[in-house]
Length: 169
Image (cartoon, rainbow, N blue to C red; front, top):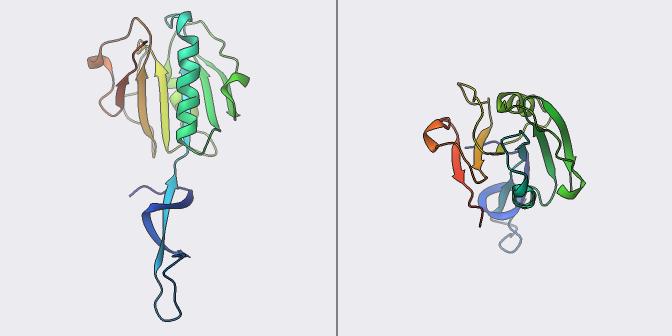
């Protein structure tokens, strides 16, 4: 079981810290139901190999990832061969995606692991042409979203990460 930091009313897990709204009585205590709120961070590859035409698609994917977490806010990391920006955002349109150098996602993954509020899930949007760490980051699940017209083969992706092929259509 994962240990999430925040919870909301839902129907996934039971808890006695929030009693059931309708079934509570003086004699029998019924647990309430809660859902975890995952902390999601998104790491965006801004290297030269990323095609400039996929900019709107990347923005939409970043916004969708953040919306799946705690609503519409979260941490976005911008990286090519070095970290360019780490920012807690509500709207992705407020971000500047600068870069254009080489690619090394190990730097971005290490930066995400060092965040004070470490993410439960790290989503990496990249074309896959990058070196990967040999081991997964501690206490964090990694999802790699392969995006772009020219992507690295799935066999080059690390086995410890979940890989999703994002179509350009």
